[in-house]
Image 1 (tube, rainbow, N blue to C red):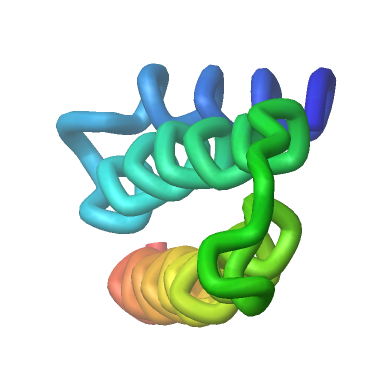
Image 2 (image 1 turned 180 degrees about the vertical axis):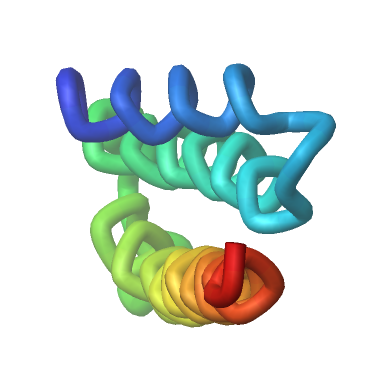
Amino acid sequence: FGIFGATWFGWGLINFRRSPAARWACLWVGLAACASSLELWDFEPWADLLDSHALWHLATVPLSYLIWKVYAMDAVQLLETKSKHAYL
């Protein structure tokens, strides 16, 4: 996670007021850190079915959608900004 998460969080903090994507990026970093802790927090499987590793895999599904949303929102914002300043 390390430098990748720190970079996204830094970008999110710098652009927090200007970009909705930055707010979602900060949320993604926080949730990804929580999900990563499932890899470290090992516990016995419940009913021989659900353990911390399985929960980590389950947590990556919404995280994948969330980071895609950040990319998409940022791309749309960049295209809108570019089109506003195209003739300046």
